Length: 168
Image 1 (cartoon, helix red, strand yellow):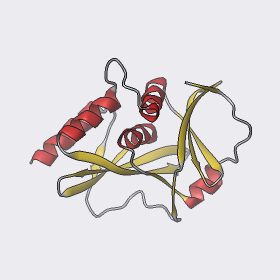
Image 2 (image 1 turned 30 degrees about the vertical axis):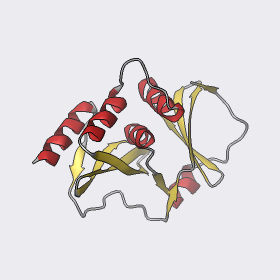
Image 3 (image 1 turned 60 degrees about the vertical axis):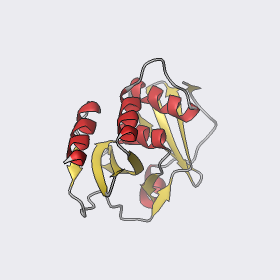
């Protein structure tokens, strides 16, 4: 019962639709070997904030809103903002109840990135469907691995040129 309440609180606080996926199902399974993202960076581009997921000499760009970009950047820098943002609050709540993000898997379907956020709470592990940006932000806050399929890395990942865009 307590884990159900925690899941409900977590879903409400994210301000995004989040649906628990039944245990044992793996709807986000990649058709290729998983690759662990080695580095996450945030930059401003002409089109807005972008998160770069880097692994094996390739970079996957994911455009995010400014609030999520600031949340990710502050977590990467170990900074505490004057007031908690949604991801900070989620981190604090999960921590307080003994929960933690253990990993996220980023996939691409029909031109949209998805996140499958794995949360461990006591003796339960649940996977939640989320926006890729929220999933990345929470993984960064918990220092949890971010995974992508090798196929995604090879098709959507770009070989980086010279650094473009300003840091946040």
